Image (cartoon, rainbow, N blue to C red; front, side, top):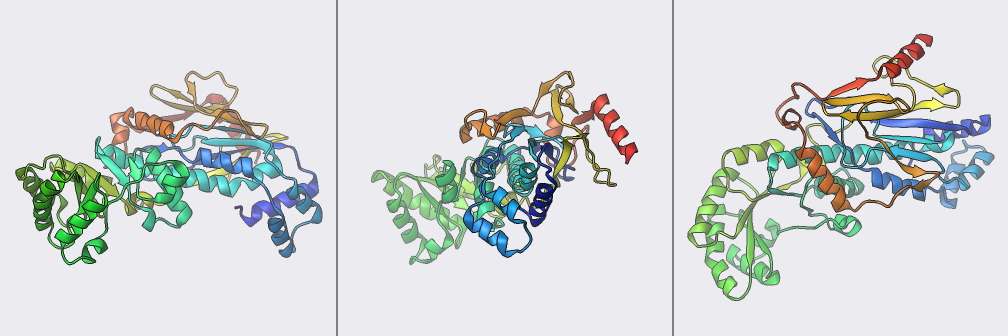
Length: 432
């Protein structure tokens, strides 16, 4: 899981004897116009990758077929294990543009070949977690479930996206693999095909409730939503007498606000106030906000395509660059793509952040902590539920302006550079 140029550079480093430690940092260059903050995610998967980093014989054999690499370099890869240090902001930390999210200090070859995987692992999950955080804000205490696996950009994206959405507040996922791999609660109802496979809705609802008597959720919009609700109102009391619980109905199409009101009236008139109403179908944070503002009696949401593809901002300009090598701080000065030199830390204060060199005595809480030393984790991996609790607390504690969903924060969160860091950047820029 690396781009070819990382391996060609690594072979060139090897031939030149460039094995000294170097430091790379990973950050997001710009926030999308629709984002006032990001929620860092993906670190634990990245650390798993570092622990398992190997080039096995099948990999070496394939690289040999490319007829590019020196024999000595391929032998070096056979023995390669990650031996470096990693500092990172904990998952569930709110971060902003230009702030280092992760940094790696390791022998140059090792640090270089991590580039693609780290960008992918941290970039994707931070992207999805940041979108899901907006859904969490919009849901305003209502449950929302990840329904997005079928529209994700591949199986790995679906799995990692479910993890990221759960961190940011999703109560569950429909993806069973995510439940298996990560212990995320799984949730689901039925599809329209189940109703269509039966003679009528009454038969479908009755059979499904009997199959899942403790928690049946019935999809009622295959034909006529309100008529579907009437059928539920008719059969639910009878099923209840048999110990069978219809816990919720789901709406997946039409005017969700108007239909939810009609369905609520039908159920309440039948004495079924305990049956919840769930909604899905093309939902995002803006549509959820509209539904709740309109007073729609919806208890929970299934959110799919928009969240799992972050459809309004489908990529992050995430960067992994060399900032310090054996000769000292280094800096890229390309117009529009210049980076800040040196090994850095981010300090958070009550009114903003300061990016500084790591040894500066800056007021505030340092965000980056050491998570790997000498190739080994410095602590056990936190439970995913604990990461989720931290994320929800962080999102809920954001200033009102940063929680806006309809435009840029005014004022935005301040991210300043220390005087020493700016002086260093100016000096290196002038040299080039």
